Image (tube, rainbow, N blue to C red):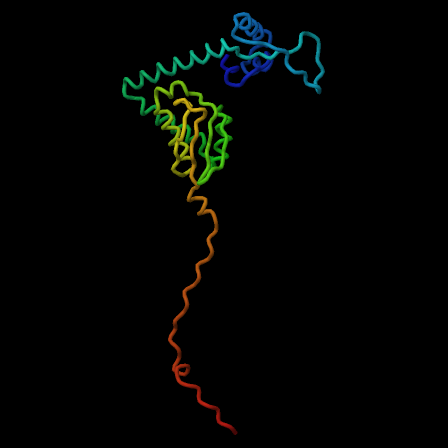
Length: 226
């Protein structure tokens, strides 16, 4: 269920490969979850370059509305309980800093908002980039910790700080899914590093003010004729 939640619809064969189990065994569990209403199943689209062998056609399994509700609720409840425990024992701030450090380490090679959005999309944030007056906005259309971040804003604060450190500039969080906004929006101003990357014209040398020679100071004597 976690794989289907994180990665979307999949066949029994692809799930079996990821879980290193037999396809028949995985299909048996999937069909049982379909009966329980946790999953929906439909025929997988045929691949024209691959000949279909004998047996029933491949099926795509996806979480149903009930399955989404159960999976999301279970993970959110566990995370919220853990964070409340940390808050009660004075360790929540440290946890948030540790999570921020992990994000900075993961995106350490990123240099631009565009590259950061691509990296975050690979991690499930569904991030996009939009140019605006005075900078760039990174929009995260999905937040894996939205429900718990609503109760513990330290998570959002640590993430925002990590984005700023990675990009080497001060950023501003304009909106968050945790607070009821449609997307998490982070404004990245035009960095001074961009200006530094543009080669500057060479400075003009100061004019020389050498004292003229005595000959130059005296008027030129007229030439004598022969």
